[in-house]
Length: 457
Image 1 (cartoon, rainbow, N blue to C red):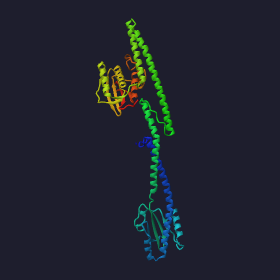
Image 2 (cartoon, helix red, strand yellow; image 1 turned 90 degrees about the vertical axis):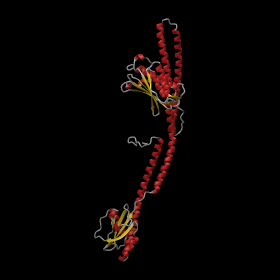
Image 3 (cartoon, rainbow, N blue to C red; image 1 turned 30 degrees about the vertical axis):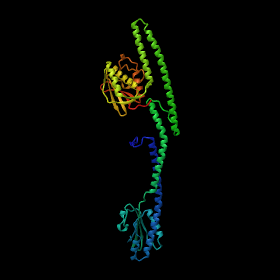
Image 4 (tube, one colour; image 1 turned 120 degrees about the horizontal axis):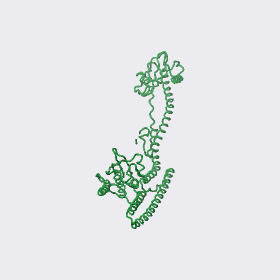
């Protein structure tokens, strides 16, 4: 999981985790909203109830003080005080303090609860802080986070009762928290089960598509799961069946064409023996050789990954052997030793692909330097030449059949324009690829990538 704005980097990448995360978040938000709504409603209801209890107790204490002797008042106030209550007798002010509408409403309610003999005004203060109230009028264990309610009730012409009640903060409802956690857990489990039902067929579809992209024969995907996923699997199976039938028909057609072409070429070679003119016979022989070579290369490029079976080989030893053979033939090829590089491949096809790259480098770049580089998931066979390179806008086109860039390659070198097409088909048939890059300072670098374990075809 990564969070980056623009593409939320901490956001999970897999569908199953995203579904669980979204479901859990939705349940959490809904539970928090319900909890806040209930908490707000309960707080208003609780506040009204608390105010009534406060007024009842203050009225009872004030009535008791008015009915006892002055010397007994301290005993009554001490008895009625507690951890959140404090009653004290303070001097009466000549003019009552100002009050808010809520405080005036509560003061009126307090006056209505007192005996008719209480004609003096009552004062209520709701917006004070604990720190603003004198220490002698606060409960012994005053909590600074509490909300004080202070009521002044006149007792006689000279004194008044100071009643301070500390309303403690309402704790977060534990039951709602536990219920929210349980709901999140159950919803996440349900989302995981649903995600598994959706993701599993999608994963199979992805794996099958990857096999097709690597040049392998795609297995039939199970057509199950929700309707949308099942329909995608059905469409994929139909597509792969059609593609497979088309490719098979194409291969059969090419095999037939190849067989039909070889027969007249062989007959023409026999007929050449009856031509007396040696110069004419040599020219025709050369044309037949070119036609034979073109026929074989066309068939190889069309087949791509032919009938050869894959096996584990040492890529380093295979390329070294090829370079040694070319060197013995007098070709300017240099090989840089590499440690063993095990790959699963069709050795004949890989040898043909590397040979095409090396022969191109020698033909168009005067020499070939061959190396193997390690990559995170496989190996790169790199062939470097000293030629003119390839223009950037032509590097993709050179892989098309029969394309030769005469403006940048020597026209006298011959060739059919199928060498790189065949290299690309072989590389992709092994789950790899081929890239051409111009080097700084001149020359071309051809990089044939092969995975350590290729897709099974």
